Length: 253
Image (cartoon, rainbow, N blue to C red; front, side):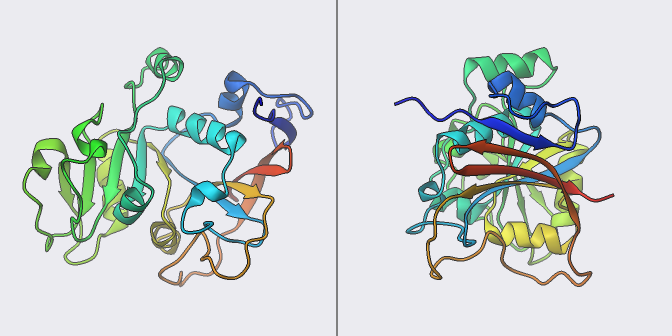
């Protein structure tokens, strides 16, 4: 059974025509690289706001969501993820298929984005494929107090920002000092909450899965309260794949 087509419903950009079925080249244009440094967050949620089904986000996803997931990885410089999500979701090495590697080469980018892991405790396994088989040397953002496990510095650059808690603002600055201007965050909810509290989120790509999961699961965001109040976003575009909505929101400037 072939995956459902992704169709354009609406865009703030008049040059992007609604109604068309989008192939990967057209999806790349709809989700393309921004001008200047940008932090983009990508999440999937149920209609009633759940972040997972039976403990995993895969229960909310589908072929269309996975296509956009791959496009977002293709166009970013750095991939930001919390260590808990890395372990729980079973991340492997961040690799791309040949068409996506070719696109990156043609646009002057390394063949794969740089993985950046946030871990206050450095509770990561250097032997896991996400580090040991990484096509680009990962970065781990951690604290001054954390002790690196043996072998981690052989497979990753350890960047210490903050004494006992990761200073995510300083961490983001350290990534951008390495040339990672277009950063994609894949979670988890506590990292998203920390980024929002620090007023660092520029864009949210949100897939809305047509499921009602009930009250058990958490939301896509968790953690510290943002003192400055809500952050206003504007709808940039809306795509549809069967009953799955793919939304892109950007900061209201």
